[in-house]
Length: 371
Image (tube, rainbow, N blue to C red; front, side, top):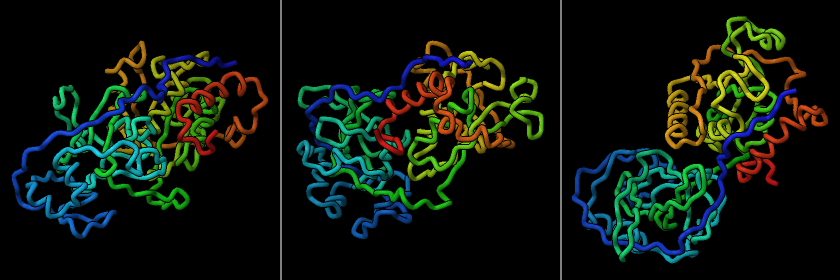
């Protein structure tokens, strides 16, 4: 009988939130040549600098911005004013979609990076990428704060605080007027949006049962990868002589979830610090591994591993291997959807069920069927 293993939770627990955000004045920006506007998701014909895809930095004067922006947006974006709490329509929204800078269209956040806080402004625990938002010290009003600025147009967005939920512990407190929102239709999935990743995290029954409940995941298939034997059987892999690992092949809609969330779940529901072992299961077939299909997957995996090690989320270093994906062999049908078909079995109740309960608690806002 396999035994479950305990490790540090990456709980997305809300902490106390500040109830005040203030602004500061900005110096005028020097005007430079206009950037080429690329195809937009959100159309703003009155704003020649607006683009949801162009990441080239802008250096536009406030005189020019004042001609383009509405008075309310200009006051916040260029003069760092602050809208009143609970007045923006986005602060408590849980709609799936993408948030952009209302001034220049730069992509800032995805909805799965957002949480509903009690501060009255839209709040996020991390930004879309490292360059989407920049920061500088704000010592106005006798306080020491960190101002958040759009990484493309340098417009004021809000402030960054250290009272947010795990895993980042950050709260990006944003003015709703500084954000544009593009909702996504979960019901319609374009095949071009489907992506696949292969993961090994011990017994594939456990990993499969978790990802089947994550919103945006379209299919989870248990099987084998990383070995030297063609189309091995479960018994052959269990011997530890094939080099293959028990894996799950996850197909997901990239407009609903993303690789970052897939990896966060992965590092939450298994122990990535035990070499070739998960609980009582010992052998290379139970190793922690990410089988990357391209350089983007490899870099994303390496990035989150580096961050977890730097933040010392675990008491020991992560030993998850990054292995190039070659071929996936599907396990026999009796091994597919195992938990759902065998809930009454002792292994399912004692090992798999606790993992599912942990996942549901931490990612409660990302479940296909919310509790």
